[in-house]
Amino acid sequence: DTGVSQDPRHKITKRGQNVTFRCDPISEHNRLYWYRQTLGQGPEFLTYFQNEAQLEKSRLLSDRFSAERPKGSFSTLEIQRTEQGDSAMYLCASSLGLAGTYEQYFGPGTRLTVT
Amino acid sequence: GESVGLHLPTLSVQEGDNSIINCAYSNSASDYFIWYKQESGKGPQFIIDIRSNMDKRQGQRVTVLLNKTVKHLSLQIAATQPGDSAVYFCAEIPYNNNDMRFGAGTRLTVKP
Image (cartoon, rainbow over all chains, first blue to last red; front, side):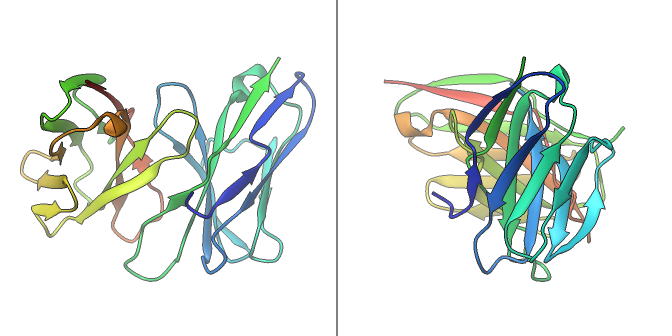
């Protein structure tokens, strides 16, 4: 257990529905990251936050995806109008955010299945 | 385009043998490299890291080697144990950047 938690662990939804995932990072970590991982592939970067500010977004993050970290603690990732291609594991990670430190601690992920 | 990749998708070793997992990268601006282990149903777990100004770094039963000349990274696991069975990813971070790029992974299977 890395100290990063994600909820839910599994989500099955029908195409067109909206889903929201939550991530609780390690409490003293300033940076929070979202990744998507499909079977047999490495995680792909989606976005990251420095405290409550969303500083970078991947081109993978379409306009149906939105992430928030309102108080600089937990974060939510929402997918609107889900598509079957959204089926994947969504991973959250956090890091201290200090200069020269890069180690990211990952949560267990939320597995999304869109039917 | 520039990317992180792996030479072999699967590796099978006998318990007690040493394992070597390889990774090729092409972004010469990468400053920091990490090896992660991912077990089924879990998120990636940090194993060991190395900065671009180093050639070798050792941890407990693991060693990472970095060859910047040929842009090659390897993870050596000594006395491989059944608990080492997992998918191993290398990841790179360019200098002054937070965009960590992962390779596709190598599945290590340890036979008893």
